[in-house]
Image: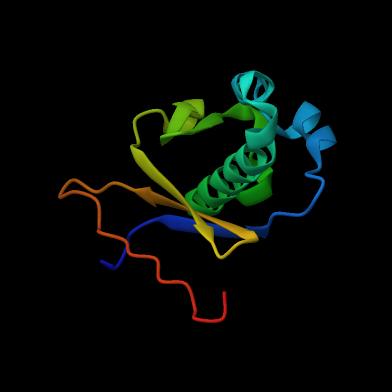
Length: 128
């Protein structure tokens, strides 16, 4: 990857049951609506896709938990920003998410540069 590229990564174990109660304070209205509209069997995985995408984005911005998690929204399918934070509205973040092994979600947020987005390949370790 090129030096100076802003990126964030988050990996979470998909625990059962997913902590849906935190969506009230940590998810934007669009994300809560997305979860509510999902087929019940898909909600668990979707929760972790949204959570890891949000965490990857705030890590990539360098702001971290100083940014309110409900101040922006992500769409898990396809991974994209729905409502970028106002101070970063002109930046283009490229989001990706993967299932890494049977129990983990991994998301990546990369700030696109003028010359494009670096290619990313995720290769899970053999033990997953």
